[in-house]
Length: 74
Image (cartoon, rainbow, N blue to C red):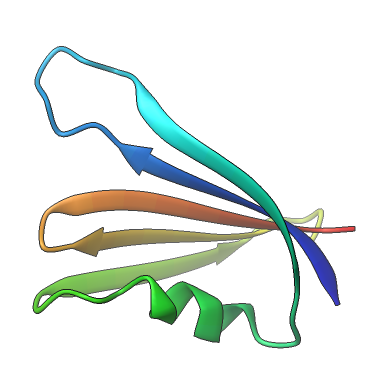
């Protein structure tokens, strides 16, 4: 299945609401494995939410670095 992947990396600096955003196209039958590939630290958490439109959102915290991965089906 083809997805548009939006990866947001949240800024850790106080009073700075900016974030890095990367957009790409991915073809996969297992978005979970792609999300887990971003969990490279020693301490990480991962949560998953599926929206009614089919978008899969992963919230990651890897050694204090917060990220959001949004997989939207094409």
